[in-house]
Amino acid sequence: MKEFNSEQLQTLCNIAQAAGQEIMDVYDHGGAVWQKEDASPLTEADLRADAVIRHGLGVAFPGVFILSEESRSQGDESADTFFLVDPLDGTKEFLKRNGEFTVHIGLVKNSVPIVGVVFAPALGELFYAARGLGAFKRSADGAVRCLQVAPRASNAPLRVIGSRSHGGDKLARWLDKLSCEHSFVAAGSSLKFCRIAEGQADIYPRFGPTSQWDTAAAQCVLEVAGGAVLDPAGQPLRYGLKRPLLNPEFVALVDQEARDSREHLWCE
Image 1 (cartoon, rainbow, N blue to C red):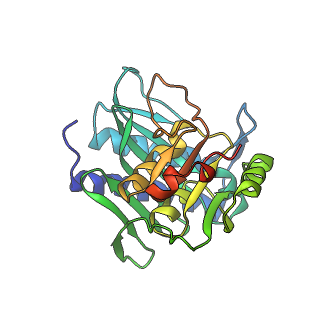
Image 2: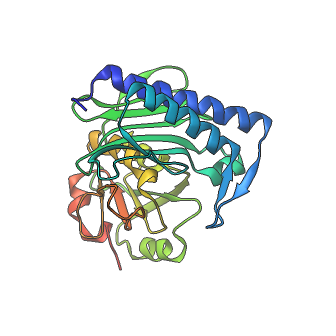
Image 3: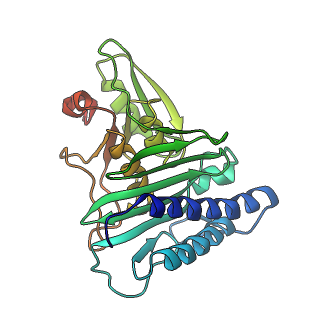
């Protein structure tokens, strides 16, 4: 694939929004719910959104491998350029009907997420980014603005954002060991990355399990906006068809000062 351009980024946004329409149809009118082998929920909305995304990507980007939470392409699983898709990120939030679920489409090249689209259909918020093009948010009213992280003032409380469903005791211990004044707010799905990218939070420590498709698109949005997503060794989170599907623990954060502060990363 040649260098990604703005028209292709808009195409990805359109695909994500079309998937979001399928999700909202089920959200508004109901649909079937199943349970996967790992006891996580699977809904009709997941499958309908996945079908829309796979079709859209196949037409617009023929031959590019797609790894989705719900399906995967046939063919070359050694490709170093591929899509990572979560058609409904935050299925538990969808079932709780709190609106904090997203469509998640990321493009990875040589282990790095280079394009990301995160659409929250119930909120009407669209986050999208591509390296070399910038990071953007389109609000529910249609207004579009560039995203840039807001470095924390030295005397301001650290604004921590975290999962509604994961983290548990380890997150509580992490928060207890912070030596600086801080606040905590819970949020669902990949919106946590996006809230940092738009300047509403400073750091997101993740101790519960995630898979590659949960993070790639939102990581791209945050990194292009000036933030970072780091593993316990302090290295950027990376992706690959030959890598384990499960990510290591990580922290998403806003600025270089926080990146260099070990107490803000791994307190244990």
